[in-house]
Structures are given as C-alpha cells and as structure tokens.
Length: 526
Image (cartoon, rainbow, N blue to C red):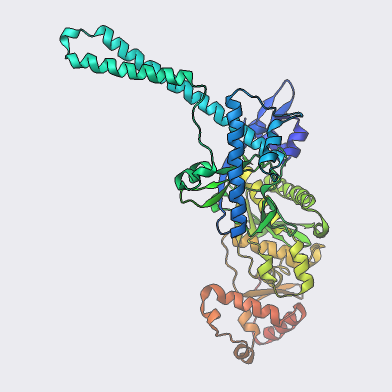
C-alpha cells in the first residue's frame, strides 16, 4: 500500500521527520516516480498467545466451541466447492460465501465469512502445491528405477533384483495414476463425528478472523481500551477485563499504532483454548549514541512535568504541559493529544542529546484507592495505560531506552528537597511538586538514592538538614521511629519522608528549621 508522506504519517502514527529518517536508512520502500511510501515495508508481524481457559466461564466456552465447530463446517463447505471449480467473489456484491455463513450460523458476520473464504483458498493453494510436489516426486522415482532396469546387465545381478525393481515400478506407476486421476487431496475439517478425537480437535478446530485495514483491527475479537483507558478483550459479545500482555510482547504490542490484530482461537498441545493474536508493529531504529543523561517524566491527571537530568543528577532544564482537558475526551482524541506532546518531548530530547527516558510505573487504582470519591472518579478517567503504551511504542521504534521506576514518595522528596533549591515555585507557572518530582524520577532512573535530607531557602540561603534532626525525642517515641519499617534499609528513608509530609507544611518546616539552626550550626547547602 503506497501512500503519500502525509497519509503515511497519519496511518502509521509517525511524524513526517521520523518517516524521512526511515527513508534515509533504507528501512522503508520509497517510489521516486509517485513520491509515495510503501507502509507495509516498515511493518513486522508477531503472534501473541493469550490463554483463555481462566478468562472464560463454562457457558462462554461452550458458545466458543460451538462457533468453532460451525466455522470448521463453513470452511469445509467453501473448500469443497472451490475444489469443484466454483469461484467466489472477494469484493463487490453477490458474495455467495456470506450467505452460506449465515445459513450455517446466524452469528457469523461478513468478516468471519471472508476469513473462512481466504483460509479455504489458502488451503486449496497449499494442497495443489503439495499435490504437484507429490506427483513430481513419484515421477522422479519411476524415472530412476527405469534407468536402473535399462542400464543394468541381467547376467551380473541376482534374478530377484530385477523382480523386486519391476514390482516397485508397478506400485509407483499405479500410485502416480491414482494421484493424477484425483482432482484434489483429502483435507480434514472439524466435523461433528470427529469430536471425540482429542488429537484431531487440537490440530484442526479453530475460529479465525482477519484484521481489517483500520487501526482497531477486526470488530469481533480484539484487545482494545475501555472507557477508563485500561486494556480489555472484546470476544464477540463479551468484554473481558484484566488482560495481561506477555513480557516478551510488551515492547512491540501497542494499541496506538498500525495494528490489524488478526485473531485465531484454537487448541494448544495440552488441549487448552488459546487466543493467537497476529499483530503488526513498526521496525525499531537502532541508536548507538551515548546519552547525556535521562529525561524524567511525571504525569498526573492534569499535567505532564518533564525534567532533563544530566549524568551527575543535576537538572539541565524543565518543561511543563497542561492536560486537564483530557479527562472529558474520547480515547482516540486522548491518544492524538498525548502522541503530539510526546513527539515534541522526544524531538527536544534528540536536540539536547538525551536518548534515555524514565517514567513512573503507574498504578493509580492502588495508590489512591481509599482517598475520596471525587479523586477516584477523576483518576479512573486518567489514561495512564494509553500514556505507558505510547511511551513504549515511540521509544522502541526510535531506538531510545525507557526505564520504569517505583513512584513512591517522588512528589514528597521533590517538594521538600529540590523545589526550593532550584527555585521551581517562582520560575515556573506549574506547581513546584510536579517539576521536582520529575527530577526525582530522573535521578532514580540514573541510579541515584535520595538521603533523608530536606532543603529550604532561608534569607536567600539554601539550608539542608537531616529529617531526624527536625523531630524532638517525644515526637520520635510517639511516631514509632524504631518500627520494623525503619529497621529495613530500603524502607527506612521512605518512612521518614512519609512522616515529614504528614507532620509539616512548608511554613511549619521553615519555622522548625529556624529553631534547629539556633541550637546547631549550618551544615551547608545541598
């Protein structure tokens, strides 16, 4: 499918500069005569297997099994007519195979009938090629035996040698005549009288639906986003939640780029129902350049904060994008807006020499589960899964590295330790905690560990103090400083940050620091 640069960019969800990069590297076919791009050349296909046994109940399994039987019957009916020379139209009106499909099962739609026709045509082509190979193989064997019989002297070999060769020649000639007289090879389909043969059931019964030209794939069986921006499996009239993508496919399978999603339901070797999803993904570009650092991204329901973090852990610059209007947008519109924002961030990263990205491992449902109904309603609309899939697809196909880190206390550490140091609350319109949290995410992606130290600007100077020095002995006893969480090295600092967030505001923290500075000298700036 050759398309112009603009249409190819829209179809593949790639910017025009990215397509030109693929063209410069000879990764996409380009026609100089028509000035168009072959989008199929940039795509690769993979097959992802998802078990269905635990996702379907008994009634759903029986319904799927009945559809598989009828689909096998439909394929057998179409295939037998193709063998007799009856032709079917793949386009236009009067498509007989669609009428046959509705007669066999009223639930069969036109895409299922078209899939059965293309599958039957493929089987017929395969059987004809196998028949031709079989006939050629028999003819070669017959020619060799005849050559041996004509060139061999009867006096120099045993008399039984010629007798055996003539008997073998006659058998092969009869077999060749039988194959030439037959118009087709025998092919078995899922008939009802073969239901009890378990081995046959595993190898032959299936239900296949081809993907359409649209980005969503076929409309009956596909993985899609629900209203909350989470993945779900649409299986005919059922919508199954909680679909998990196998780890080997997480980098390549996304729902926001060119993806036809042809689906096949069949039995695996153990006799279990599985869903095979054949999808397309864009070839990734190789990027061997050394990154100047990482880009930390903090995304919330209303804003995206970006921090360019150098290798030494210090920020180069900050950026902020408002996305509060996404909460009331449709999924397609949300994907488009987020895609444009991420394209701008990635282009800026290339210009600064940053080829590494760090984001939070988002899970808002667990993080804010018991806060408030209003917050839960807002977060349920936030498309964190769409953002994550977009980041994976865009970084993968442009050869960039993506790291996901634990989001615990990134906002708290940022606001108490870095917001005053970098003067974020006055130099930007955004809230300081968003940009400082992006800095902490970037530092965590580079492998830095945060000490339990706070930093506050007092009289134009940045003062740093350990969190423990801000609490007196009575507060330490009442707040269970010596709890089991504090005994674990990995969680002790997090427990202190959590206590600091619960006990102090910025004003209270500044006042407490002034009290501490009276008793103790300044340790210096952070």
